[in-house]
Image (cartoon, rainbow, N blue to C red; front, side, top):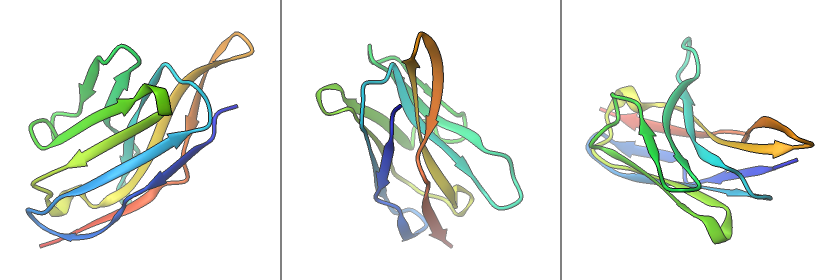
Length: 116
């Protein structure tokens, strides 16, 4: 069982920056971030594997950067040039092996609001 604790959300003006952090209670192969805006489905933002391979949604490429500190089981999301359409609840994500099977874990979510 892996527990995820997020921090760093808040209110920011368009063009501004925020940095999200997520600490995992155990080791995970892939970590990253998803988001869900009101009335929309949860969508991928960015992920990073233990080896450092990254994957980004097209809508955030060039503006967001995902990174991780493997020794501390922590993943970060640096969000720059924020837009109102980035407003959503951001969820930390981790994929780990539990009892021989891959399991997806989720944080409780942190609100990011970008004002125009």
